Length: 501
Image (tube, rainbow, N blue to C red):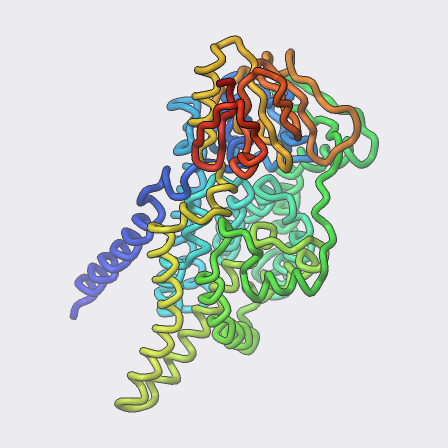
């Protein structure tokens, strides 16, 4: 077969695999998962206020770390969402669109990364693995702002592997705004990566200095945030950029080390939006292959993925275990699996006849079967899982529409929320101008990691229902048994609307 025909076959194959990957990420995109999380709503609303009013929900101009709940929210995702929301509108499709694009981009980026650091064969294996990987599919279909990090860090690694050290430094700095927990990883990662290249003679000191300057320049807004929130610098707002003083710093440090390690070795934290039992089984059975890939990388002096993984150790030790918080490690673990699969297949191919076929079929089956089950369940029964329905607040939009219709445009509506505040959902669905929100909002006094809202515009928020009040009430469905008989109850997914008979 001539080179042109071989090249055409490879291109057809890669586009075919990419097409499958795109379909798995786009199919029923707005409805699986159905509904919206409070974090997605908060992200979408702040992107909308920035797009239309040039301020976040608290009135600050273009901050690069958002106050949001009061204790911080990563900002890069919101800025990437601004063009879509500005041109089109704020809804769940356009709120999730940046992660769909980033999650789809992971496929060719992962191929390029593995091809450069290892071989084309490993790159093909990696492309197939990531195409059907449950975690990679899930993060592309949700608008959680922190799940932008894998695409940013992989872009940096690809650029670094191709010796684009200055551009890589820019993306490493952008990773800070994708998910701030990367700050525990970057000092070790950047020191090891750039010093290794200097020692190998691939990177000159002046060029490394230039890369450091680019990194610090892009990281400057976050440096200023630390100066304001930890070292007493006065907050400021220049009109084109601001740094605000937070009510409290987010408390993600700690957690039991055993629990943290359990998340690392199972890729499961109990939250079905982050991973299911089937996806966890698929991850666990791949760990021996990942270990083979890790050892092989060390033996063959493929230092880049090894540094990537080892740099995450401080994160695993310091930060309470959660699949999202550890999202910097899942791609490199998958890279090691691809390298391990290549080694095992290489070994199996040395065998003859039946043994070779059994070995290849066995490895392929144990990797594929959990993913196939996950994909089937994800598109058929995932939305019906009670914890998923609750997490994605299914029915809240319909409950809100109904309650407003009952009460009238200017009437008050009570939101009863014994556990978590849901004011971000109202901001998302009603698209209340930030000036009106700031003019009417009343906040519970005191220092809270998550600001406690008492009321704004036409809404009151409380932990307990006052059934003597005649205003419509929206509350979680599990409170239905406590509603007195003289009230009318109408169900909408995970919520009920309680009104006068």
